[in-house]
Amino acid sequence: MKKFLIIMSAFILASCFGGGDQAEAKRTVAAMMKDISSVEFKNFVSNAGYQTVSDETFLYYCGSINAKNSFCGYKGYDEFVYSAGTKTVYLKSE
Image (cartoon, rainbow, N blue to C red; front, side, top):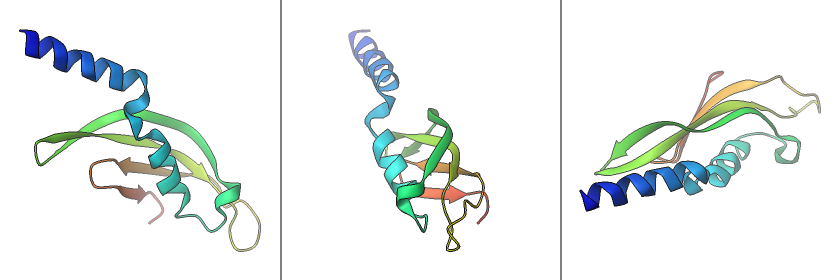
């Protein structure tokens, strides 16, 4: 019972602070854009889901991202999913 309470406390604290990977998720997704300084996030959701890799549980993050393209115009919002376990970004447009 004590182990269960410790694990549940850890999950609750992780959800309060976004799991610690939120900034890394935004940096990784933004790095895929041509103009990183123009990146805008919308509907960013941390703790969107969980993934288990090698007995460790990682978070998924999702949302929409917009950034300038090669012609200095915004391309429009594109939906993404970031897996903190595999450090992989999935864009809807790709």
